[in-house]
Amino acid sequence: MNHHPVIRHVTFDCTGDPYDLALFWSEMLGNPLADDDKPGDPEALIEDPAGGPGLLFVRVEEGKTAKNRLHFDLRPRGRTRAEEVARALALGARQLADHTRPDGGGWVTLADPEGNEFCIERGDLD
Image (cartoon, rainbow, N blue to C red; front, side, top):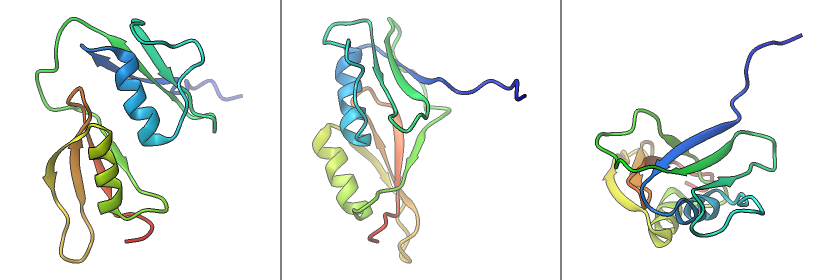
């Protein structure tokens, strides 16, 4: 019998409305918000229908003060990296840096609406 813990949630602190940040990530990842979440709640949860860890967004008083020590590296499926970056920007992300190499490798670093960094790597169609 395996007695090791499993990751249940990855938790994001946010100073704005957790529901708004959860909506951004729900759209980015295509996973639904929990049925009972609504604007103004102190927390919001994105559930993974495939059974992976959920993303939990929790309101906190203190703002972000340094670079994230943990971030997501996203690989686009059915889109190029440029298409996925454009989609993220349209959802409210900000581009921080483009580390795309001439050979097509590399990544683009973005920040979500609360400033949490994430990267978009080469996609299936690149």
